[in-house]
Image (spheres, rainbow, N blue to C red):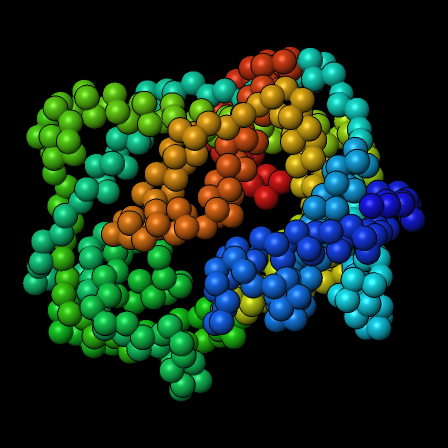
Length: 450
């Protein structure tokens, strides 16, 4: 076998591989000998079929098998010998000259093919101990606990049917039909729909139009869709809703006491308060961790600049771009509706794709150099968490992942990434910075796509 590097430009590589006809014929003959002991042909005793007869019957298919195996083995060796790692699956091109290939199949010509691929770049990792990061921390106050307790209390509200007029905070159950310019529109019809007055869950004017109505009342409510309404075809338009009130119910709040706590699975009101405090700490901790991780990734991205495999960037961009266009199509928006242009959006997401590829390569290199591994238990735990996200379909989801190694492999990515991040944070210089809950969550919202 002869391997020659025919091109090396940047991260692009091209190798030419030649496997001699004599080597192919040896493999071909060896495979026929194996086949001789395996096939049963009428008129011949097992293992006694003449090789020439096998060659006549199976020759072309056997040579095709030999060529496929030879290309697989020789291409792997060629890449391995180069001491470089392909960024994606290499592209293998066998000669298109039919006459030459016929000679190869006949065992009268060498097999020649090319391997084209991009390699993972080599780069120096910055001194991770010199990274300076701030971790936002929030102290859980009595006020925040009280507010959370109040939300828990309000979420547990029950409703009792009443005969009087609908008031603020009442639940009004209605049938409705919405029309724009006299025509019904998609999503504008509902039956037995509960509306909590004062929650502002509908467009402006809708809930206000229900105040004062009783069960059995009918009314047409005039409303106007906001200019920024997601469904572009309805944004800013006047609408009329024909309403029939089915029921009016008043809210009833249970006493905030030990009995209330027991209904939620806790022994006492004090126990409920402790649980609320613990949940707040967990939420603050998660948001703090997310902020710190994002800050770390920003620092790593800034500290490392190296050539990126164009194929990886293109694949990442295509994935992001498809998602962006899908979301725009779902809400009926254009790039202009998002105060940008397609050209600017492409530039923005191209930069995002490059950042993701750079950080992916960097974290992978740090993880590999420091032998960071993922255990089967960690993958199984992630799988169980994933399965629990689909109540009633647990078995189907579990079997899907068990039958799809690629899907299961995707669960490993965030586990590995977080383990590498934890490793880096142990080395970096991290200082706590006290902030308010509002500042912490505002920052999280502003940077959720970073």
